[in-house]
Each structure stands twice: as C-alpha cells, then as structure tokens.
Length: 366
Image (tube, rainbow, N blue to C red; front, side):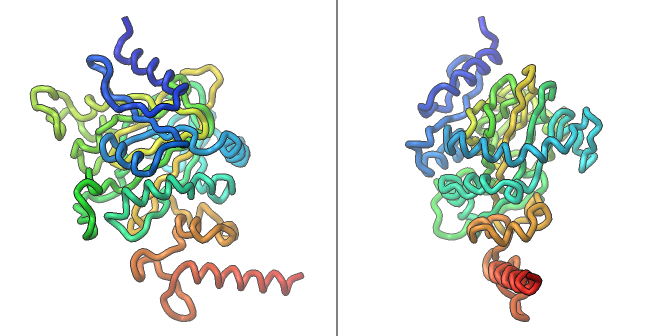
C-alpha cells in the first residue's frame, strides 16, 4: 500500500491533468488536505478569495498563456546565465540566509525592470482583484512587496518551511469601517503572494509545499525557519483539540505540508501567514522556474527596494498602474510624498516631471 506521502505526491501530479476545481478536503486517513484548484477560464475573484480565507492558498490553472511565460523566461535567462549557485562558488547576498536561499538555486530580483512581458502577470486583472479584496479592509492601496525569479536546479534540497511575514513586528491591525466579518476572516495577513510557474512545476523538480489552513494557527510573527522558531515547545494549534496535537507547530507543519504542482502559466496564491517552502529537486535535468510577486498594504515598507532594482528610466515608461504597484504612489494623503513644485506632492507627478526634464535634455543633445 502507498504511504501517506506517496499518496499525496501521486494525487498532486494527477491534479496537473485536470482543470476541475478541487475541494480542499482529506481523502485518506492521515493525509492532509490538498491545495484547492480553480480553472482560470471560469473562476471569479470571489471564488479565489473564498479559498484563501478558508485554506490560505489556491492554485488557478492556466491564468496566462504559455507564450507569455516563455517570453518572460527568455527575458530573464541572460541574468541566470551570468550568476552562479552557491555550490558553484557563487556568493550569497545576505550571508545569514545561505541555508534558506539554497545551494543549487538562483534568484533574480527587479523582474519588472528586466522583462516587460512580466507586466502582464504583475497587473493581471484577477491578481489585482484578489489582492485588493483581501487587503483593502486594512489599507487604502495595495502595492508590490517583492518581485523575484527563483530557479531551482537538480540536487537542491528542501527549503525550510516558513511564513512570509517574518520581517514585520507583531501588532494588531484594526480594519477600516464598513467591512463584514466574512470579508475580514482570518484577519490581517500582511500580504497575498502570487507564485507563478514559468516552467512546469512537479513534485520531482521542487514544487512548492504548502500547509493548507496554517494561516489559522494563530502563530503570530515568526522567523523564516519554523524548526528554529518553535524549538521543542509542545502545544496545540488554534481550532485543534488538545488531545489531537502533542507536537510542535514545526512538526505538525512538516507532516501537513502538501505539494502544489502546476503547469506553466498557472499561479499559486497564498496568504502571508501560510506556512510553505520549496521542495527538493530530485530530477535529473529539470530546472524549476517560479516568479514570486508578493503584494501588501502600501503603508508597509517593501521587502524589495524597487527604487534600486528597477531603473527609473524603465519605471517612467511603465503604465501608471504598474508605476503605482512598484512604489510611485501615495498611501492616504501624504505617505510616500515627493517634492513637487517646491511642496509635497504625488510621486506620480514627480515621475512625470522627471521624465519631461530628461526628454528636454535628450532633445538638446541631439
């Protein structure tokens, strides 16, 4: 008979072939829920948000065409070729994150400045509506927190399971007036991630592991590595009977994690409080490429400094919607203001004036 892990892996790979929405329920004793799946050609933002509220994660299959992701992948390939993995003698930008970043993985930040095709993913209408429905109860505007390509090469090990709110101090955020309890469930999650498959993502080549429902464990703000944070402390998780859980949250997370394989062009949405992590690439020659576009409230500092990773000369050519997504915008009346005409003003107007001034300089030099 199949072990629970073999059962999960087989079912995860089989789900790649189906476009039907999958219920997030356990189908075998001792086997955790699967990641819910919806088909892009017939799902709504409300359906995606319902799955995020309940399970904290959801795959939308075929959200962009293979042609779009192929173009993005080709745009970013030169940046990958110019870099080495740590196992090849490459350096790690933040030494403390070496084990987290991986020995046989490469990363590229600022992808919106390196691939115009990626703009179709960053500003996709479904992504925009999902992130706003989940985040606007707690802010006036949503923007990008991170834009990153991660390529996982054969031989890479498991990434530590973690949450994506590790950089945020613990605090209680009150929602804006006018929202129902259903819209606020399960509370402020600090962000909504969209993880795009720009190559087929399988159990063998390192498909992301997710712990459905872990956003409801009331864990608070944690570090990247759950095994480091929780140590040997035993206890219960929210909503689970005390007699059913006599293990650390880290132990429970490892047992409950399931793979979320995807065909290229599909996207995995997950909330910032959901425990997740990349898995080992056991294939012989299959590189897994994923793009992380993580959205959060525009009153929180971006994890990626996009004013440095995306050249201003490219930002000024972007549509206004994208400029606002990467940071050229206000939250509320003055947060993020810039000097415009000798007074505080909107970064959108500042960028327009900068562009006009540079066009004049260019004209005089011709």
